[in-house]
Length: 68
Ligand SMILES: [Zn+2]
Image (cartoon, rainbow, N blue to C red; front, side):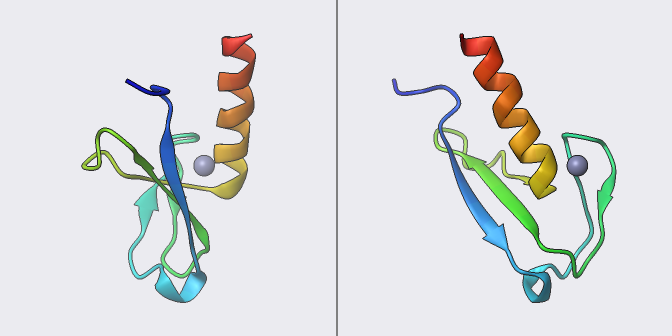
């Protein structure tokens, strides 16, 4: 097993965002047409999530502080 937090993070450009999503970081919507990030866990590819960029960076810092 590798890092349990190992994820593939892909940037979605505004023109690619055709649907609204809910960001798991802040529980607010990401409107269609907004650039954001898609995060797919390496070992659970069905668990893809759409995040605001800022929320994902905050999440990364939160996890970093948990790990240390
Ligand atoms: Zn968010």
